[in-house]
Amino acid sequence: MLMTACSGQAPLKPTSGSLYNQLGRMDGIDATVERFIFASVRNETLKPAFNGMSVFDYFRLKYNFVQQMCEIAGGPCRYTGRSMIDSHKGLHITLEQFIESGRLFDEAMKKNGVGNKARQAMLQRLGPMQNEIVGQ
Image 1 (cartoon, rainbow, N blue to C red):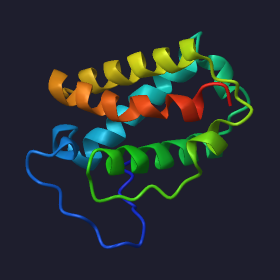
Image 2: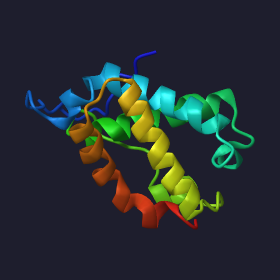
Image 3: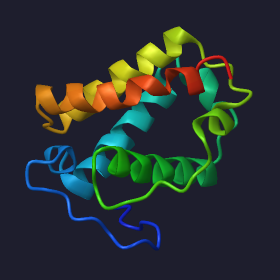
């Protein structure tokens, strides 16, 4: 299911060479996030963070993650979900889990045909979230 809903703000127009376009726009971001989440819930290192997640939680997580990745990549969406600290509070995410999630996200982007340069650019934008996620 394509998650095209963005906030009520006027959409921005990404440039043709933008990271958003390199990630495949909304279809590509949606496919990458879905692949990443499915890999994460099956991954022994990350599985504990998903204990007790309902179907509703899955759809909310996916929607918010797609919206956030769209914004981070310079797309037209605006992330309106909770802060990373609030989203990860009580999960006690370890540095090992954070690194593993980055590896799985990179793998998901690669499987969706995202080039190395764009994958590295996206991971560099996500890396600073470590302090807001690890240890919460």
